[in-house]
Image (cartoon, rainbow, N blue to C red; front, top):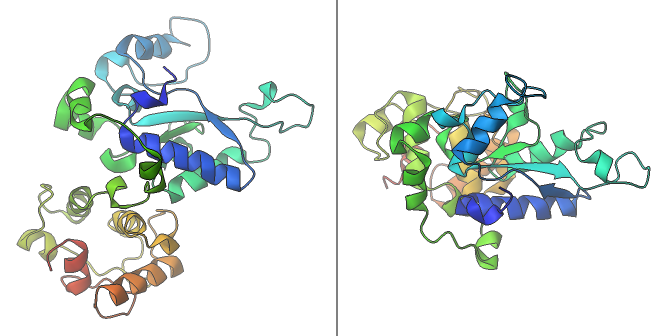
Length: 274
């Protein structure tokens, strides 16, 4: 299915925002694969196995292992004459100039995950909401089947105003942030910040635990709160991370040192405990 309106509302917003951000940089993209049914996914899985073609997925439809089945993934293609022959049709997947890497980088900067970062099958046209990880394991654990998950979406309507607000906290809510922090620091994952959660926090800065697993959710949350100077969520606490942290600390009356110290006020503020 190619109807973007069939996707998760937040992904609809992110896709529209990505297209506009790419356009501003002279890159033109369109979207292809959106929501897939169980039958469509099984047919795709059969390709290269029991039907002609190359293997393009390891996800069986019957196992609900494709993000497309859950409405949290979308594929894009290039809408440009990359090779200069006067025709765009033969360039939909032309990556000779690294356009897929550029789009992937832009996508990550607005909070999307990119299949080009995967190690098993690199899927450069593939973008997804990373709130539930890079696989469907968490979604299956929480909801069982896609239909149950989709019931949580509300009416799914997306307005111009909501597209413009795609990078606000609605894209990465505090509860999900807390859960990601808990998972990264070994706490019980329940989305409620308490004694255990704050007690298991670690100090992160450009010189301390700069590559700790908890860095990525902090980057995403700072970006979602409007501190876009943090850049893409690469999981490394570098210069941009320090600048974004200082900006957050200054606005929230914490010690402005660019370091998120274990158990202290910056962590408590981010977790909603003060």
